Every structure is written in structure tokens, then in C-alpha cells.
Amino acid sequence: MAGRGTPIGPRAGKLEVHILVVEAPYYEDVSKALADGALAVLAAHGCTFERIVVPGALEIPQVIVQAAAAGRFDEEEGDEPFDGAIVLGCVIRGETSHYDIVCNSTNHWLMQIATDLALPVGNAVLTVDTHAQAMARAEGGIAGKGGDAARACLRLIEVGRDLASGSSR
Image 1 (tube, one colour):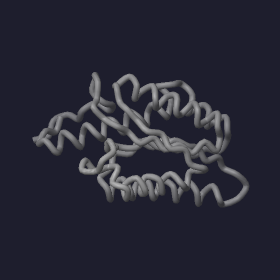
Image 2: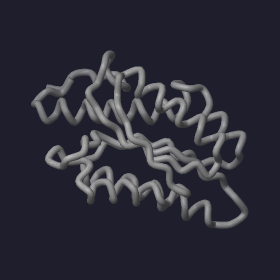
Image 3: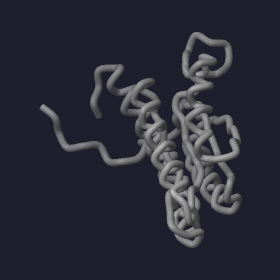
Image 4: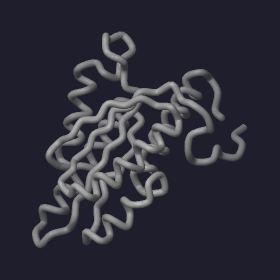
């Protein structure tokens, strides 16, 4: 019988995880604030990471697929495997439908990849109307959306490990 749910966020302490951080710094100040928060959470949990920078949000899902195709999420390959991914970026509404295409495509493919690969993905690709809205969500260090994405990724890794071991805490 299921009990009450586990609180959101990783459990306290050091986590033995290696994370792929994919960043689209189209808006550099927003991207920096998101990265500051995400990396602070990773540091607080003793996690290691590798960071890949791409031109824009549409390229983020492609990098995750490329990493998977290269075996970077598999224990058997030579390089340290990634346990999950954190994605960082921002799409600000403009005057054309391009905003809708980028937002919908990026988020659709991120979720498709995450579910197809059973891959923990923390998503901090902001979709906003203005730069001010983006900064309001990105700023705040570990309390901003970058920190939220890192916590989500780490919690998903814990859940996956718990389920694999027969535990559901």
C-alpha cells in the first residue's frame, strides 16, 4: 500500500551522480543566472557534471540524443556515464509564431526523449513574454528555476534508483 509521497527535491547529503548540463545561452544574462542556480545545487550535493553549450533551445534535445547515441548514459562505455541531464535556456515571445514553434518543439522532444530513454531531465528552458519575466524566474541562485531544474533531476535519479532496488521511498 502506498504511503504519503516523498517530499520534492533530493534527499540530504552527497549524491554519486554525474550530470549532463546542456545550455542555450541565447540570452546570456538569463542563461548565466539559470546556470548559477543549477550548478550551486549540484555543488551542494557533491555532484559532478559536464557542460555543453548550444546555439538555441531547439538544439538542446538533439544534444541529449547525441549523448545517448554515443553511449554516455550507459555504464558499459568508457567515459563516466551521465545519470541525468539538466537543460537551461530561454525563449522570449516575439512578433511571429516562431516562439510557439520553438517552445512546443523543444518541450515536446525533451519529454519524448526523457520518457523513451527513462532519462531524468530537469528542465529550465524558460518560456516567457518578456526579458523581465525571464530574469525574475532565473535569478535567485538555488531558489531560481535553474536550481529547481537541478533538484528535479536529482530527485528523478533517486526515484529511479529506488525503483530499481525495489524501494519506493
